[in-house]
Length: 134
Image (cartoon, rainbow, N blue to C red; front, side):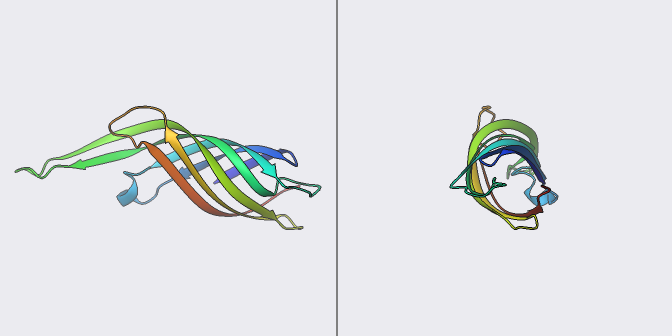
């Protein structure tokens, strides 16, 4: 889920939150909170905040690292992790005259806390459909 507040026709800020509902993939990332700031380019519309954008973001995320050992007793270890990172997103947003929003994006960033259980980087890509209240 995401929310964006439009400051003017060239800038906006907001936050995204995500939860992984599939336990099989929770070792990658179980949850994430991502506040962001966006700058829109090549925008000639009155209401703005559409078109090509570059976003700077922070990400606070966590999950469970599952390490498996194939010893005699089949030892299994799990470690919970939490990390904070900084990243950049590129995307394109279209807004129809009646307020429907369609967006595609790709994002990557680097986690800042050194931890054996945590990931070193994060990647996100998305197709978002929403509605803008003018």
